[in-house]
Image (cartoon, rainbow, N blue to C red; front, side, top):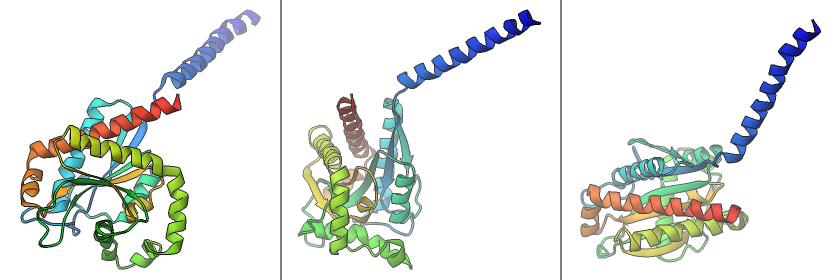
Length: 267
């Protein structure tokens, strides 16, 4: 009996040790999986801004899907999460909550821009990070992008009384800024550099504005305006698959390079 007990126990002990070694080895070599939330702005009953022919919601969706496709195909350590993959409405509170619940490492909201009548000559890309400097054109963008929350009957409760000009919002932003602002700006700079140097787009630079969807995400976040639908030439370009592809490729490279930078700082 004693011999039989030893005979059966030894393999079990070895298997346990080997299982532990395998788990430890796997844990040591397994790459960190970064989570990126891609947010095609607007959708459904919320058309966003409009050009002569294009609706914002319709042009940003294919661009976002292309970005996700490139991230899935050309990286092995990035998980893509979409806030929408079809023409459906999802209010900003849900988009931000989805990113927070996923414990995402990055939130990228993709939009198209517009100017008031008489300014159709303006064109180019802009990338926004959260900020309280709502002056001039930045304030107009903030008002337009934040106006979607008014579509909700209970928006005052749902959006926690969000007011970009309220002192308490500025205080909350200062706390958040310390944690995420540096990396948000780094990604935004990557995006605009890619647009200018690789995608052949006119970059209007990195800007700051009080945008609700950025304010309520607990991670580095940017809002990208891929062009002006109120500029006839740019609207025509944004309608083409080739230009959408160039823009999506630029955003993909910016995100990829951002995480490559993070890896060098974490080693």
